[in-house]
Length: 446
Image (cartoon, rainbow, N blue to C red; front, top):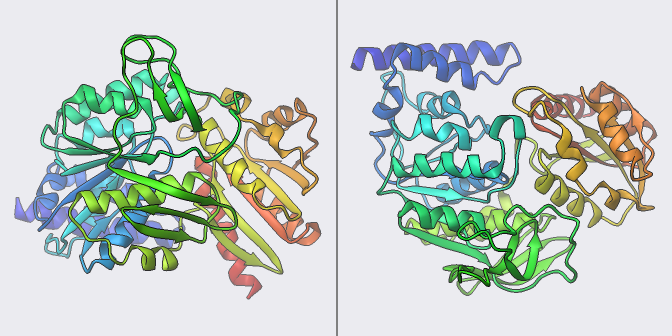
Protein backbone atom coordinates (compact mmCIF):
# COMPACT_ATOMS: atom_id res chain seq x y z
CA UNK A 1 0.00 0.00 0.00
CA UNK A 2 2.90 2.35 0.68
CA UNK A 3 4.13 1.91 -2.90
CA UNK A 4 0.64 2.67 -4.29
CA UNK A 5 0.38 5.71 -2.03
CA UNK A 6 3.72 7.08 -3.22
CA UNK A 7 2.85 6.40 -6.86
CA UNK A 8 -0.58 8.05 -6.46
CA UNK A 9 0.88 11.16 -4.83
CA UNK A 10 3.65 11.62 -7.38
CA UNK A 11 1.36 11.03 -10.35
CA UNK A 12 -1.19 13.49 -8.97
CA UNK A 13 1.44 16.17 -8.43
CA UNK A 14 2.68 15.70 -12.00
CA UNK A 15 -0.85 15.97 -13.42
CA UNK A 16 -1.49 19.08 -11.36
CA UNK A 17 1.73 20.70 -12.59
CA UNK A 18 0.95 19.94 -16.24
CA UNK A 19 -2.61 21.23 -15.87
CA UNK A 20 -1.46 24.51 -14.35
CA UNK A 21 1.00 25.04 -17.21
CA UNK A 22 -1.97 24.62 -19.56
CA UNK A 23 -3.84 27.37 -17.68
CA UNK A 24 -6.13 25.01 -15.76
CA UNK A 25 -6.49 24.65 -12.02
CA UNK A 26 -5.48 20.99 -12.23
CA UNK A 27 -6.93 20.15 -8.83
CA UNK A 28 -9.76 17.82 -9.80
CA UNK A 29 -7.61 15.94 -12.33
CA UNK A 30 -4.95 15.41 -9.68
CA UNK A 31 -7.54 13.98 -7.30
CA UNK A 32 -9.01 11.71 -9.97
CA UNK A 33 -5.61 10.27 -10.93
CA UNK A 34 -4.75 9.63 -7.28
CA UNK A 35 -8.04 7.78 -6.69
CA UNK A 36 -7.58 5.62 -9.79
CA UNK A 37 -4.13 4.52 -8.66
CA UNK A 38 -5.02 4.12 -4.98
CA UNK A 39 -8.77 4.15 -4.16
CA UNK A 40 -8.08 4.37 -0.39
CA UNK A 41 -5.73 7.34 -0.70
CA UNK A 42 -8.04 9.76 1.18
CA UNK A 43 -8.48 7.44 4.14
CA UNK A 44 -4.73 6.80 4.24
CA UNK A 45 -3.64 10.45 4.15
CA UNK A 46 -6.40 11.81 6.41
CA UNK A 47 -5.43 9.22 9.01
CA UNK A 48 -2.00 10.85 9.32
CA UNK A 49 -3.36 14.12 10.75
CA UNK A 50 -2.02 14.92 14.21
CA UNK A 51 -5.08 16.90 15.29
CA UNK A 52 -8.67 17.71 14.40
CA UNK A 53 -10.42 17.89 11.05
CA UNK A 54 -13.31 20.03 9.82
CA UNK A 55 -15.58 19.84 6.83
CA UNK A 56 -17.54 22.92 5.76
CA UNK A 57 -20.89 22.43 4.01
CA UNK A 58 -23.88 24.60 3.17
CA UNK A 59 -25.45 26.34 0.22
CA UNK A 60 -23.75 29.74 0.45
CA UNK A 61 -20.55 30.95 2.06
CA UNK A 62 -18.59 27.69 2.12
CA UNK A 63 -15.42 28.90 0.42
CA UNK A 64 -15.11 32.19 2.32
CA UNK A 65 -15.85 30.50 5.65
CA UNK A 66 -13.51 27.59 4.96
CA UNK A 67 -10.60 29.79 3.86
CA UNK A 68 -11.05 32.21 6.74
CA UNK A 69 -11.12 29.32 9.22
CA UNK A 70 -7.94 27.92 7.66
CA UNK A 71 -6.19 31.27 8.00
CA UNK A 72 -7.37 31.65 11.58
CA UNK A 73 -6.06 28.20 12.54
CA UNK A 74 -2.71 29.00 10.90
CA UNK A 75 -2.60 32.19 12.97
CA UNK A 76 -2.82 29.97 16.05
CA UNK A 77 0.49 28.41 14.99
CA UNK A 78 -0.94 25.22 13.50
CA UNK A 79 -0.19 23.50 10.19
CA UNK A 80 -3.29 22.87 8.12
CA UNK A 81 -4.53 21.19 4.95
CA UNK A 82 -7.18 23.17 3.10
CA UNK A 83 -8.81 23.09 -0.36
CA UNK A 84 -8.56 26.87 -0.74
CA UNK A 85 -9.33 26.76 -4.46
CA UNK A 86 -12.96 25.84 -3.75
CA UNK A 87 -12.70 22.47 -5.55
CA UNK A 88 -15.17 20.79 -3.24
CA UNK A 89 -16.34 17.59 -4.92
CA UNK A 90 -14.79 14.19 -4.27
CA UNK A 91 -11.73 14.65 -6.49
CA UNK A 92 -11.09 18.14 -5.11
CA UNK A 93 -11.19 16.83 -1.55
CA UNK A 94 -8.74 14.03 -2.38
CA UNK A 95 -6.47 16.51 -4.17
CA UNK A 96 -6.28 18.74 -1.08
CA UNK A 97 -4.57 15.92 0.81
CA UNK A 98 -2.56 14.49 -2.09
CA UNK A 99 -1.06 17.83 -3.11
CA UNK A 100 -0.19 18.58 0.54
CA UNK A 101 1.72 15.30 0.94
CA UNK A 102 5.44 14.99 0.33
CA UNK A 103 6.82 12.68 -2.37
CA UNK A 104 6.80 9.78 0.07
CA UNK A 105 3.09 10.21 0.71
CA UNK A 106 3.53 11.66 4.19
CA UNK A 107 1.34 14.40 5.68
CA UNK A 108 2.79 17.05 8.00
CA UNK A 109 -0.33 18.78 9.37
CA UNK A 110 -2.13 19.39 12.63
CA UNK A 111 -5.56 20.21 11.21
CA UNK A 112 -7.55 19.79 8.02
CA UNK A 113 -10.29 22.18 6.95
CA UNK A 114 -12.10 20.92 3.87
CA UNK A 115 -15.00 22.47 1.99
CA UNK A 116 -17.34 19.80 0.58
CA UNK A 117 -20.21 20.08 -1.87
CA UNK A 118 -23.35 18.75 -0.16
CA UNK A 119 -24.01 16.16 -2.88
CA UNK A 120 -20.45 14.84 -2.50
CA UNK A 121 -20.65 14.14 1.23
CA UNK A 122 -22.04 10.65 0.63
CA UNK A 123 -18.90 9.77 -1.35
CA UNK A 124 -16.41 11.46 0.97
CA UNK A 125 -17.57 10.61 4.49
CA UNK A 126 -17.24 6.82 4.15
CA UNK A 127 -13.46 7.37 3.76
CA UNK A 128 -12.93 10.54 5.77
CA UNK A 129 -14.39 10.80 9.29
CA UNK A 130 -13.99 14.45 10.32
CA UNK A 131 -14.28 15.63 13.90
CA UNK A 132 -16.50 18.59 13.00
CA UNK A 133 -19.00 19.54 10.32
CA UNK A 134 -19.62 23.27 9.91
CA UNK A 135 -22.98 23.97 8.23
CA UNK A 136 -23.41 27.51 6.94
CA UNK A 137 -27.05 27.48 5.76
CA UNK A 138 -29.52 25.58 3.58
CA UNK A 139 -31.09 27.45 0.66
CA UNK A 140 -32.58 26.28 -2.62
CA UNK A 141 -29.77 25.85 -5.15
CA UNK A 142 -29.52 24.40 -8.69
CA UNK A 143 -32.86 22.65 -9.04
CA UNK A 144 -31.63 20.26 -11.74
CA UNK A 145 -28.73 19.07 -9.56
CA UNK A 146 -30.23 19.08 -6.07
CA UNK A 147 -33.97 19.31 -6.61
CA UNK A 148 -35.91 20.92 -3.79
CA UNK A 149 -34.27 21.61 -0.43
CA UNK A 150 -35.70 18.39 1.09
CA UNK A 151 -33.42 16.34 -1.17
CA UNK A 152 -30.33 18.21 0.02
CA UNK A 153 -31.41 17.73 3.63
CA UNK A 154 -31.88 13.98 3.07
CA UNK A 155 -28.41 13.71 1.50
CA UNK A 156 -26.78 15.49 4.41
CA UNK A 157 -28.72 13.46 6.96
CA UNK A 158 -27.49 10.20 5.44
CA UNK A 159 -23.94 11.51 5.26
CA UNK A 160 -23.90 12.76 8.85
CA UNK A 161 -25.14 9.41 10.11
CA UNK A 162 -22.03 7.85 8.56
CA UNK A 163 -20.03 9.81 11.12
CA UNK A 164 -21.99 9.52 14.40
CA UNK A 165 -19.08 10.89 16.47
CA UNK A 166 -18.82 14.04 14.36
CA UNK A 167 -19.83 17.27 16.14
CA UNK A 168 -21.96 19.74 14.18
CA UNK A 169 -21.75 23.53 14.21
CA UNK A 170 -24.92 24.95 12.71
CA UNK A 171 -26.58 28.26 11.95
CA UNK A 172 -29.22 28.54 14.67
CA UNK A 173 -31.00 31.27 12.70
CA UNK A 174 -31.78 28.73 9.96
CA UNK A 175 -34.71 26.50 10.91
CA UNK A 176 -33.73 23.98 8.21
CA UNK A 177 -30.20 23.52 9.59
CA UNK A 178 -31.56 23.18 13.13
CA UNK A 179 -34.11 20.59 12.02
CA UNK A 180 -31.40 18.61 10.27
CA UNK A 181 -29.12 18.65 13.31
CA UNK A 182 -31.88 17.52 15.64
CA UNK A 183 -32.85 14.64 13.35
CA UNK A 184 -29.30 13.27 13.04
CA UNK A 185 -28.77 12.79 16.75
CA UNK A 186 -25.20 14.13 16.54
CA UNK A 187 -23.95 16.56 19.15
CA UNK A 188 -24.27 20.13 17.88
CA UNK A 189 -23.46 23.75 18.72
CA UNK A 190 -25.15 26.84 17.32
CA UNK A 191 -24.17 30.32 16.20
CA UNK A 192 -26.47 33.17 15.23
CA UNK A 193 -27.60 36.78 15.56
CA UNK A 194 -30.25 37.35 18.23
CA UNK A 195 -30.93 41.04 17.62
CA UNK A 196 -33.01 42.58 14.87
CA UNK A 197 -30.67 44.31 12.42
CA UNK A 198 -32.96 45.58 9.65
CA UNK A 199 -36.32 47.30 9.67
CA UNK A 200 -39.08 45.96 7.45
CA UNK A 201 -39.98 42.47 6.34
CA UNK A 202 -38.96 42.29 2.67
CA UNK A 203 -41.66 39.73 1.93
CA UNK A 204 -40.55 39.40 -1.69
CA UNK A 205 -37.64 37.18 -0.67
CA UNK A 206 -37.92 33.42 -1.09
CA UNK A 207 -38.14 31.82 2.35
CA UNK A 208 -37.60 28.06 2.13
CA UNK A 209 -38.03 27.49 5.87
CA UNK A 210 -41.26 29.35 6.44
CA UNK A 211 -43.11 26.10 7.13
CA UNK A 212 -42.18 23.90 10.06
CA UNK A 213 -40.40 20.72 8.93
CA UNK A 214 -41.79 18.87 11.92
CA UNK A 215 -45.50 19.50 11.61
CA UNK A 216 -46.01 21.53 8.42
CA UNK A 217 -47.53 24.58 10.12
CA UNK A 218 -46.52 28.07 9.03
CA UNK A 219 -43.73 29.39 11.21
CA UNK A 220 -44.04 32.63 13.15
CA UNK A 221 -41.04 34.95 12.76
CA UNK A 222 -40.23 37.67 15.29
CA UNK A 223 -37.86 39.11 12.69
CA UNK A 224 -35.96 38.14 9.55
CA UNK A 225 -32.33 38.78 8.68
CA UNK A 226 -32.66 37.57 5.09
CA UNK A 227 -34.24 34.66 3.27
CA UNK A 228 -35.50 32.31 6.05
CA UNK A 229 -32.79 33.32 8.54
CA UNK A 230 -34.14 34.94 11.68
CA UNK A 231 -35.90 34.37 14.99
CA UNK A 232 -38.63 31.77 14.44
CA UNK A 233 -41.02 29.50 16.27
CA UNK A 234 -43.79 27.12 15.32
CA UNK A 235 -47.12 28.04 16.96
CA UNK A 236 -48.37 24.46 16.47
CA UNK A 237 -45.69 22.05 17.75
CA UNK A 238 -43.41 24.37 19.73
CA UNK A 239 -40.30 23.98 17.55
CA UNK A 240 -38.31 27.20 17.81
CA UNK A 241 -34.94 28.84 17.39
CA UNK A 242 -32.59 27.17 19.90
CA UNK A 243 -30.37 28.78 22.48
CA UNK A 244 -27.40 30.25 20.64
CA UNK A 245 -23.94 29.25 21.82
CA UNK A 246 -22.03 31.87 19.81
CA UNK A 247 -24.30 34.89 19.67
CA UNK A 248 -23.29 37.97 17.66
CA UNK A 249 -24.54 41.30 19.00
CA UNK A 250 -24.05 45.06 18.49
CA UNK A 251 -24.05 44.52 14.74
CA UNK A 252 -22.72 47.23 12.45
CA UNK A 253 -23.27 47.08 8.68
CA UNK A 254 -22.00 49.86 6.41
CA UNK A 255 -18.63 50.82 5.02
CA UNK A 256 -17.27 47.97 7.14
CA UNK A 257 -18.70 45.22 9.33
CA UNK A 258 -18.57 44.81 13.09
CA UNK A 259 -20.06 42.71 15.87
CA UNK A 260 -19.37 41.36 19.34
CA UNK A 261 -19.18 37.70 20.35
CA UNK A 262 -17.98 36.22 23.64
CA UNK A 263 -17.12 39.74 24.78
CA UNK A 264 -14.81 40.38 21.82
CA UNK A 265 -15.30 43.13 19.28
CA UNK A 266 -14.65 41.90 15.75
CA UNK A 267 -14.26 44.33 12.81
CA UNK A 268 -13.77 43.57 9.12
CA UNK A 269 -13.23 45.84 6.14
CA UNK A 270 -15.90 44.07 4.07
CA UNK A 271 -19.40 44.89 2.91
CA UNK A 272 -22.48 42.70 2.89
CA UNK A 273 -24.44 41.56 5.92
CA UNK A 274 -24.01 37.94 4.83
CA UNK A 275 -20.32 38.28 5.66
CA UNK A 276 -21.23 38.74 9.33
CA UNK A 277 -22.37 35.11 9.18
CA UNK A 278 -19.24 33.94 7.34
CA UNK A 279 -16.95 35.59 9.90
CA UNK A 280 -19.03 34.43 12.88
CA UNK A 281 -19.08 30.86 11.55
CA UNK A 282 -15.30 30.70 11.16
CA UNK A 283 -14.74 32.14 14.63
CA UNK A 284 -17.25 29.76 16.22
CA UNK A 285 -15.71 26.74 14.51
CA UNK A 286 -12.30 27.50 15.96
CA UNK A 287 -13.77 27.96 19.42
CA UNK A 288 -15.73 24.71 19.25
CA UNK A 289 -12.46 22.94 18.46
CA UNK A 290 -10.89 24.43 21.58
CA UNK A 291 -8.74 27.07 19.92
CA UNK A 292 -8.31 30.39 21.71
CA UNK A 293 -8.73 32.42 18.50
CA UNK A 294 -6.69 35.21 20.09
CA UNK A 295 -5.35 36.25 16.68
CA UNK A 296 -8.69 36.24 14.87
CA UNK A 297 -8.94 40.02 14.53
CA UNK A 298 -5.43 40.19 13.09
CA UNK A 299 -6.34 37.38 10.70
CA UNK A 300 -9.29 39.42 9.41
CA UNK A 301 -7.06 42.44 8.82
CA UNK A 302 -4.75 40.44 6.57
CA UNK A 303 -7.27 38.00 5.09
CA UNK A 304 -7.59 38.44 1.34
CA UNK A 305 -10.71 36.75 -0.05
CA UNK A 306 -9.66 34.75 -3.08
CA UNK A 307 -11.25 32.80 -5.89
CA UNK A 308 -13.70 35.53 -6.80
CA UNK A 309 -15.29 35.96 -3.40
CA UNK A 310 -15.23 39.72 -2.80
CA UNK A 311 -11.92 39.83 -4.67
CA UNK A 312 -10.66 43.28 -5.64
CA UNK A 313 -8.70 44.41 -8.69
CA UNK A 314 -7.47 47.80 -9.87
CA UNK A 315 -7.05 48.20 -13.64
CA UNK A 316 -6.27 51.44 -15.47
CA UNK A 317 -7.95 53.58 -12.84
CA UNK A 318 -11.01 51.35 -12.39
CA UNK A 319 -11.81 49.63 -9.09
CA UNK A 320 -13.30 46.19 -9.75
CA UNK A 321 -14.92 43.77 -7.33
CA UNK A 322 -15.58 40.19 -8.44
CA UNK A 323 -18.08 38.05 -6.59
CA UNK A 324 -19.90 34.75 -7.01
CA UNK A 325 -23.71 34.83 -7.22
CA UNK A 326 -25.20 31.43 -7.96
CA UNK A 327 -28.67 31.19 -6.42
CA UNK A 328 -31.51 33.49 -5.29
CA UNK A 329 -30.43 33.91 -1.65
CA UNK A 330 -26.81 34.54 -2.61
CA UNK A 331 -27.68 36.92 -5.44
CA UNK A 332 -30.01 38.94 -3.23
CA UNK A 333 -27.25 39.38 -0.67
CA UNK A 334 -24.81 40.37 -3.42
CA UNK A 335 -27.28 43.00 -4.60
CA UNK A 336 -27.65 44.30 -1.05
CA UNK A 337 -23.86 44.56 -0.71
CA UNK A 338 -23.53 46.41 -4.02
CA UNK A 339 -26.25 48.86 -3.03
CA UNK A 340 -24.42 49.71 0.20
CA UNK A 341 -21.99 51.52 -2.09
CA UNK A 342 -23.77 54.82 -2.79
CA UNK A 343 -21.22 56.06 -5.35
CA UNK A 344 -21.75 55.75 -9.14
CA UNK A 345 -21.03 52.25 -10.43
CA UNK A 346 -21.25 49.92 -13.41
CA UNK A 347 -22.32 46.30 -13.17
CA UNK A 348 -21.57 43.23 -15.28
CA UNK A 349 -23.67 40.09 -14.72
CA UNK A 350 -22.44 36.81 -16.23
CA UNK A 351 -24.83 33.84 -16.34
CA UNK A 352 -23.83 30.40 -17.62
CA UNK A 353 -25.86 27.18 -17.64
CA UNK A 354 -23.24 24.45 -17.66
CA UNK A 355 -23.67 21.37 -15.47
CA UNK A 356 -21.85 22.90 -12.49
CA UNK A 357 -24.06 26.01 -12.68
CA UNK A 358 -27.31 24.15 -13.06
CA UNK A 359 -28.84 24.06 -16.54
CA UNK A 360 -32.16 25.44 -15.26
CA UNK A 361 -31.84 29.23 -14.98
CA UNK A 362 -35.43 29.81 -13.85
CA UNK A 363 -33.98 30.81 -10.47
CA UNK A 364 -33.22 34.22 -11.98
CA UNK A 365 -36.90 35.08 -11.59
CA UNK A 366 -36.63 34.62 -7.81
CA UNK A 367 -33.91 37.29 -7.50
CA UNK A 368 -34.93 40.82 -6.54
CA UNK A 369 -33.25 42.60 -9.44
CA UNK A 370 -35.60 45.55 -9.03
CA UNK A 371 -33.22 46.73 -6.28
CA UNK A 372 -30.92 47.78 -9.13
CA UNK A 373 -33.39 50.55 -10.06
CA UNK A 374 -31.15 53.20 -8.59
CA UNK A 375 -29.53 56.32 -10.03
CA UNK A 376 -26.11 55.26 -8.70
CA UNK A 377 -26.08 52.40 -11.21
CA UNK A 378 -24.94 53.93 -14.46
CA UNK A 379 -24.96 50.77 -16.59
CA UNK A 380 -25.60 47.04 -16.49
CA UNK A 381 -23.96 44.71 -19.01
CA UNK A 382 -25.11 41.09 -19.31
CA UNK A 383 -22.71 38.40 -20.44
CA UNK A 384 -22.23 34.64 -20.61
CA UNK A 385 -24.11 31.79 -22.27
CA UNK A 386 -27.51 32.87 -20.93
CA UNK A 387 -27.00 36.62 -21.28
CA UNK A 388 -30.28 37.04 -23.18
CA UNK A 389 -32.23 35.34 -20.36
CA UNK A 390 -30.60 37.77 -17.96
CA UNK A 391 -31.47 40.71 -20.21
CA UNK A 392 -35.09 39.58 -20.39
CA UNK A 393 -35.24 39.25 -16.59
CA UNK A 394 -34.02 42.84 -16.22
CA UNK A 395 -36.46 44.06 -18.87
CA UNK A 396 -39.37 42.79 -16.77
CA UNK A 397 -38.36 45.21 -14.00
CA UNK A 398 -37.77 48.04 -16.52
CA UNK A 399 -33.99 48.01 -16.25
CA UNK A 400 -32.12 48.47 -19.54
CA UNK A 401 -28.96 46.47 -20.17
CA UNK A 402 -26.23 46.01 -22.76
CA UNK A 403 -25.33 42.60 -24.19
CA UNK A 404 -21.72 41.47 -24.52
CA UNK A 405 -21.38 37.70 -24.57
CA UNK A 406 -17.62 37.77 -24.00
CA UNK A 407 -16.97 38.91 -20.45
CA UNK A 408 -13.40 40.00 -21.21
CA UNK A 409 -14.72 42.41 -23.85
CA UNK A 410 -17.41 43.59 -21.45
CA UNK A 411 -14.80 44.37 -18.78
CA UNK A 412 -12.53 46.20 -21.24
CA UNK A 413 -15.41 48.33 -22.50
CA UNK A 414 -16.43 49.35 -18.97
CA UNK A 415 -12.83 50.13 -18.00
CA UNK A 416 -12.60 52.41 -21.03
CA UNK A 417 -16.05 54.04 -20.85
CA UNK A 418 -17.32 53.40 -17.34
CA UNK A 419 -17.32 55.43 -14.13
CA UNK A 420 -14.24 53.78 -12.60
CA UNK A 421 -16.21 51.62 -10.16
CA UNK A 422 -17.18 48.19 -11.50
CA UNK A 423 -18.90 45.19 -9.93
CA UNK A 424 -18.70 41.85 -11.74
CA UNK A 425 -21.22 39.23 -10.57
CA UNK A 426 -20.84 35.76 -12.06
CA UNK A 427 -22.24 32.31 -11.47
CA UNK A 428 -20.10 29.26 -10.95
CA UNK A 429 -18.42 28.27 -14.23
CA UNK A 430 -17.70 31.86 -15.16
CA UNK A 431 -15.78 32.49 -11.96
CA UNK A 432 -12.37 30.95 -12.67
CA UNK A 433 -12.03 32.28 -16.22
CA UNK A 434 -13.24 35.76 -15.24
CA UNK A 435 -10.81 35.86 -12.33
CA UNK A 436 -7.94 34.84 -14.61
CA UNK A 437 -8.96 37.53 -17.10
CA UNK A 438 -8.97 40.20 -14.39
CA UNK A 439 -5.62 39.04 -12.97
CA UNK A 440 -4.04 39.18 -16.43
CA UNK A 441 -5.49 42.63 -17.14
CA UNK A 442 -4.27 43.89 -13.77
CA UNK A 443 -0.75 42.59 -14.41
CA UNK A 444 -0.70 44.18 -17.87
CA UNK A 445 -1.89 47.52 -16.49
CA UNK A 446 1.08 47.63 -14.14
